[in-house]
Figure 1 (cartoon, rainbow, N blue to C red):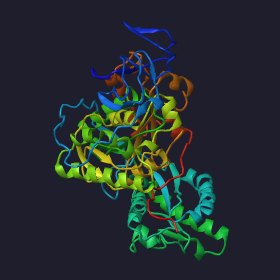
Figure 2 (tube, helix red, strand yellow; figure 1 turned 30 degrees about the horizontal axis):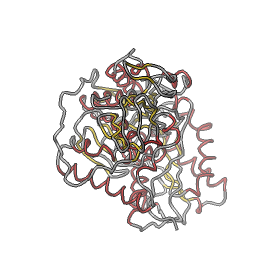
Figure 3 (tube, rainbow, N blue to C red; figure 1 turned 135 degrees about the vertical axis):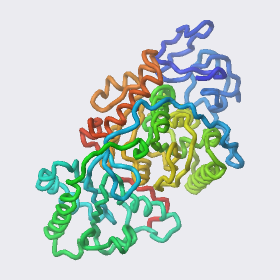
Length: 497
C-alpha cells in the first residue's frame, strides 16, 4: 500500500512454501487478506502498512511469516493538541459526471428527500407494540390509496423514560430524536405517538408549538387498544393525503446529503471498497453535494491525517474536541479504542484498531473537511464533513439519519444485512468472494480492484452513478428491496435510572 510498508496482504489464501516474490517464501499458510512479512522484523520492531506503524512486534518475525493480531503491541494514539491543519487541502477532485438528480423538495428547507415517507416518531419505547400494529394496518388499508407515498416508517427506539433526562449528555439522544422528526424524507409532515407519562415529553421532542392534536397522539388519552390504533390511523390518513401531493423534481447536487459508513470490515476494505467510496465521495463533493463520514474510534488513529484536511483551526479544534470526548467516554468505561475490532474483523485480516482505522478513513476520499459535527447534529456547511458518531453500525446509522442523510453508502468485507427504513442503504463489498456469496445483498462489488480487473476510479464512478440512480428513485438497493430495516439504536451516553 505504501513504499515504506514491510508487510503485504494476500489476495487469496497462500500455501506454505509459496514464493510470493523473489526471496520471500511463506513460512506457514497465510489466510486470505492476512499480512505476510516482507522482511525480518525484530522484537519491538515496527510493523508498517499504509506507511503507518500498526504496532510493534511482540517477538522476532521472520521474512515470509504470517502476522496476525496476536503478534502486535498497540502504539500510543496520535496526540490531539496543536495538530497541523489546512496542510493537505486538495482541490483537483475527480469531476462529477452528473450535477443534478431527481428528489423531493423539502418544505422545511435544506436538503431534498430521496424518498417520500410517512415517518411516525415516538417519544418512548412503551408505545412500540401499539404503533407496530397500527403501521401494519396503515400499510395494508391506507397506503394503497396513496400511490405517491413510498412507505410508512415507525421510528421506534429505546429512549424516552427510565433515563436521566436532565443529565448533560442527554442532549445527544434528545437532539437525535428531535432532528429525526425533521428528516427530509418525511416531507415536513410531523406525526408523533406518545404514551403520556414519559420523561421525554412531546414538548421536549417537537416544541410546544407543534404539540397539537393535529400532530401528536397520546395513547393514555384514549380508551383502550382499538381506540389508540384508530387514533393513529386517522392522523396517518390526513398526513398521507398531504404527502401524496409530493413529486420528484430536478435538484442540484447541493441538495443531496450522503452518509458513508463501513461495517464488517476486513483487510481489503482499505484497499478496494473504502477507496472506491472515497473516489465517489470526491466526485459528489466536486459536484456540490455534501458527504458525511463518521466512526470516531475508526478515525482516532488517523486523526492527524484528517486534521491536515481541515480547512480552518476551528474545524481542527472541533475534531480534536470530539476525539477527546470519546477518549474520556471510553476511559470512563475502563476500555480504550482497542475494544473496537470484532472477531470477524480479525478473521478478515485486521490485526488491530490502527489497521482498521487506516482503511476506514479511506472512505472519506481526499476532499477538504469543511465542518465537524457532534453526534446527530445537522450540517451547516456544504462539502465533506466529519460527523462524530460511535463506530457501531446500528448506532452510527441513526446518528447520520438525524443529521439528515437522504442515502447511506455502506462498505463491508465480511457482510452484513444492515439497513435503514428512513433512507436507502447501498452495500459495497470489498471482495469478489463476498459478492459471489451474497449476490442478492450486495449492490456494488469493489473486489475487482484487488484482482486488477478494475481501478479504484472505475468502481468509484460506478458507485457515484448508482448513488444518484438510487437517490432519484430509479432503483432500490437490495436492503431496501428486502426491507432489511434495523431498529433505531439511539446513542445515549447519559445514565439510565
